[in-house]
Length: 119
Ligand SMILES: [Zn+2]
Image (cartoon, rainbow, N blue to C red; front, top):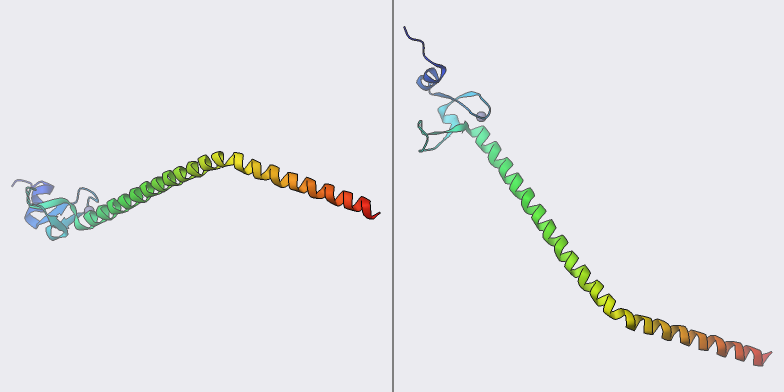
């Protein structure tokens, strides 16, 4: 009497060991794949679904990260654009500042003169 290997015994019973979780499961617990010798995937449905969900999750995380980077880049571009604009604007804003300071100074002088006259 010859002893069957585990694999042979499994094949007779219609059972297959999942390469991911290692659990022996019935063939109907494996998705079909024609290219495989027994016509089934090497990982069970549960593991297939799990890894597919994880792959989707990773893909989603990757896309979210890429979107964030793209957004940050756009933000950076907009920021440097505004900063460049601000730099160009600066002479004008300093002119305005000087003008306001001058007007304030004149008003103060006028107030002081008027104050001096009324005393
Ligand atoms: Zn499995």
